[in-house]
Length: 385
Image (cartoon, rainbow, N blue to C red; front, side):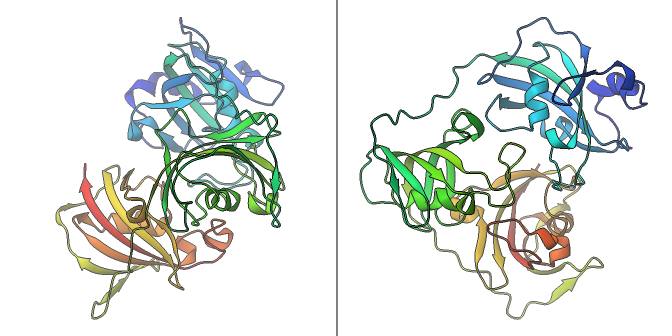
């Protein structure tokens, strides 16, 4: 078993030996919990911002996630950022307290495999609630007396506020705020309080097809409500635990800013020799880095562009002008990328050819990555911490 973070060692010595089974309280939803440290502050309510530390493990005691790697995190309750089990459990513990959760698959990730967590897994978490900041809940757009327009593809939209300038085009970087609802009232995802706007590449399918189509009808400053049928939303896959397969969803969108498309060309590997590892990962070195090789748990600052074999870009931090930080070697990325990072150093530029078995496998990652897709990644290591 992995070494436990110091702040959790005493708490988990008890929990991981299976001695809590008869002491957990079960809620009507199937969530089981135990308050392992009484807090003295307030309870959280939907819309509140919560700062917390946590550790998560499976029934075999293997740890799959911990704030030891990420540091203290903050979430907004009731905005679809976490699973239903977390949403329910965080309402049961006071500020300053700790809670032990046993989350059944239906309140976790269900039949999906997520970041190394097997399908249909029961999840265990110890969560320390450090601080709760009260906040006003998200308000849906006012659409009273506004016209609903239905497109031939089944998408419906309601213009709430007109913007200015040209409409977005495929390839543009759009900074947006959005809130997604099921049954018109239950939030499954929202950007409003956790960021200053989400950057999406129009037409790249980063959120869903319906949102991409709506952006083509919007300009800077405009607001729109869209009603997205299943085939333009999450079809037979669903999203998380709130959006069931075949569900129609509603989204409120505000287009804050538009930036033109950044031109990207796949790196030229002409004359470069490939290296193939025992796993089947193939890579080309375009630039060797300097210093030590990346180690597990190092925080890596990365720029990347991902291509399908036919040259289609499925994701790019370069297009978004948005390099990202990730802890290496803890299973956050697909297997081929995780393996490659440990072969690289600060300043490295590698082109990775990742077979499907080391990528998204037979399931793919809809809508942008099909089943059994072999992937190409141009990866640059900007910094290592």
